[in-house]
Length: 246
Image 1 (cartoon, rainbow, N blue to C red):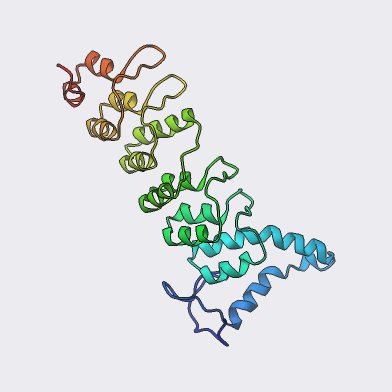
Image 2: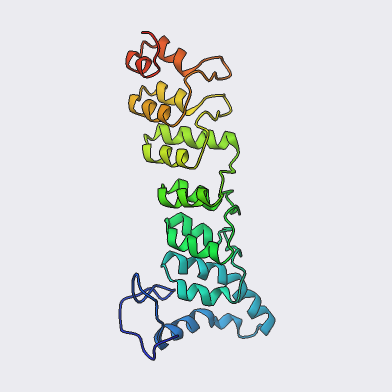
């Protein structure tokens, strides 16, 4: 349902809600702006079929914008004209957007409408991966409870974990753990995130990784373990964390 004229408030021409945390109502001003967006002058000589095809290609992007602005009413209208798992130019679905921004209530709504959560975008990311990357703990837990799994290649997963360790991003490491990631995944050299934490002499990161299930006895391609490296470099405090004799 639309109001005859919505209250004047600052808003983005593309689907920014006129109110927050309440039903979103659309006035004639919104409809005029929407018409302007879709009425491209360069389409004037195109056939109705060509125009419709172009509109269909744009709809997934509009759906993603609705998700970003928590605009469920507009999203419902758009979904009448597209499949809920249709993808935009980057291969993102509405579910990708909801997980990327951590809008768990929108994720719930999308699941209720039949959206899937294992689709990858053109970068190889699933919605769960985007939730992990942006450290949205509630969204990660919700997806896991509903059957989502990490489908990333083990080596790539290890490289992402190692990158988080090098950046001292403890929250990202925990996000991977929440998603059920094996913290002993190894990169091309057989190194784990714990190897790198020991290399960086980051006792706090070592402690966090151990709490998440990392093992100090995993060997890389040269036969070195996190424990042997700690002993070699006389890292007494880390050896204590490993429950190893100094």
